[in-house]
Length: 354
Ligand SMILES: NC(=O)C1=CN([C@@H]2O[C@H](COP(=O)(O)OP(=O)(O)OC[C@H]3O[C@@H](n4cnc5c(N)ncnc54)[C@H](OP(=O)(O)O)[C@@H]3O)[C@@H](O)[C@H]2O)C=CC1
Ligand SMILES: CC(=O)N[C@@H](CCC(=O)OP(=O)(O)O)C(=O)O
Image (tube, rainbow, N blue to C red; front, side, top):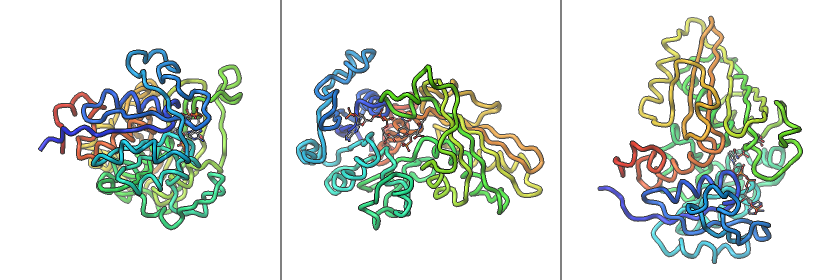
């Protein structure tokens, strides 16, 4: 039966890059409705309209940005608690998500956290990679990881979903099929060099992401928080070097791996095709993707080339969409028994529930 009951949603961190994309997708979604948008308690944008910050959305996102914090959470989400199932999207800093996500999720609400507050299963890694100690250490390995092409079956009936990071999304889509099909050498340490547009750093002004200062720079060598996340999810060590460059949107990851002796291009192609055959957001390409092929889209484009036992896989996504907000909507659709592409792909509008 097609589910046509409206599902109310609220967004925390609504004024940021991930938040505004969520708001845009929710207002045009056939089932989700936008109940409220929140910013931090003392936000300089409190009580402005979202469309004041983003004038191109005047007439579309004329919703007030309500100041809210840990002290008035009950009041903020009371409209959701009274319905069957409401959705809360947290597009907020890691530590804020960490502080509120678990208590929100205890109510009749599903929380989709776009931050890294719950991504790592090992609590010992939080002080080193996120700068805080985890208060919910014993819960970390129970919280599903929202990479829907791989974990859709784990997302239903869950109170809290932890969305992957942007670089980990691009990287895992490229590495996981090869691991699953046992094509990599035992000692292969995937080397991931990835370049992100500046929107990955969020909306707040900073010298390091200012147009006049930034060209193309590597950063956080060996210490980026996405290295342990990728490692956790692909089950092997990786060497990850992020770069940021002076374009707005997108990530292009070039990943070098060694396959076992005798592995053929056909086997690699079969690994990708069989995994992603029915996955509408993965596009297997016959030429290397460019950033502009995926920027402002919910897709992940993949391309690979083999030379002897050396394999290069290229993976490209929009960091804010497939790397964050459209992936969150994809998960929300799955949680609500809707087609995963609803509100994201025209072909999904006619398919309704699954
Ligand atoms: N940008 C990207 O490419 C990706 C982002 N993410 C994750 O999504 C989340 C949002 O990222 P992004 O949109 O880029 O970030 P932005 O910096 O653009 O936005 C952050 C939002 O959170 C609000 N905020 C800041 N501090 C607090 C606080 N203490 N309490 C409540 N709200 C607060 C901000 O509003 P105000 O300060 O006015 O209150 C703003 O609305 C982060 O966790 C990020 O790691 C994940 C993958 C990719
Ligand atoms: C270019 C840039 O700065 N990118 C961000 C990652 C993007 C992101 O938001 O990922 P999280 O959800 O893990 O924070 C960074 O390297 O910190």
